[in-house]
Image 1 (spheres, rainbow, N blue to C red):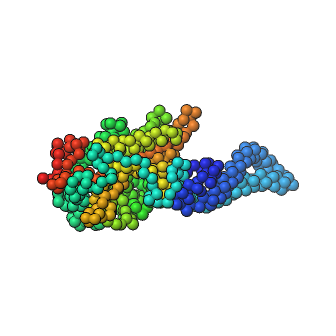
Image 2: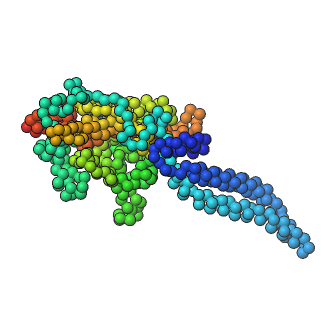
Length: 467
């Protein structure tokens, strides 16, 4: 939810921001409705004030006149009754007009609220303008010692790379056929060392973020009310990607529920409608949760296997901090640094991408994607093997007060006034997608896979898969 006062003060900033994000929300119409609504509220407030004043003045006068009516002569009655009627008429008129204003406000409210929910967070001025992810800008890249970005896999490692689809089949790590039999397309069943590696990376990610970086481990619901999805900015725009549980389809009274696509929804929803102590900030939470996404419209060979699936597990980090842009930027950089530490420990080549305005989504003022190098992606080389390509594995977002306004999440400032918090989020690790670069980058010439050292303690010291 955007700041309406900021919108009134500088509407062009929001109009330009919506255009840069590819949003066609009608901001002039919102401003028109907002002006009408404010005028109606102002009139209503004035009438209520008059209503109170008249109530104080008329009460004693009516009491006096009604007392006189009891003693009045036949000749005096018409004049006294007229006075009583006049005094009683004005409050009735005010009451009727206030009710009419209520009805006018109620008629405006649905469109007014809907338009507000569709106005995106304007991108920061230093975010590059662009229409799609193709216009994102590489910031930097990293690779372990010995990896040459200018050479192909064969030159780097001395043997032809297998794709993760080949590796999981040969090493019996995933059963796609039976997963599809149970749940349909984009489903899978991790088996044997595939499941153990999956559990290992999640445990490593959770320990990395909580023990090394002080985030508070927290479990969250993954089936949530609509308010949680709207409050975190995933609705109204993301309904087509969300699994919906209709209240009418379940026994007993209830309301519609939704399966979350990220632990961010539950973590941010924990403090909805709360006023936090300023001294308690920043709140730094981490969760591991099962996530569900419909992946509507996704297609292509690079979505095959474990890359784009309906159900996965993710370690997520969330920060709620003071309403200070510099502080938000510091947290953003720190969260990205945490993930870089993790990927470097796993010896996975990666790059950081500055997302352009058209790739930020509804709620972000800025977003940095982290993509791991995946040898089994991309076009085919002269030998008919994939040439390798980056694939997104992490995304770090800075939202300022956009989510917190929708969630009514505030803190009390030094002057005693309440202020909407800022929020940020980032993927720590999402699996089984992260298994793709792990398996492909650590495969060996004999078809086995070397387990990265940080994961070995979570696999009882096992060093290799296969063989």
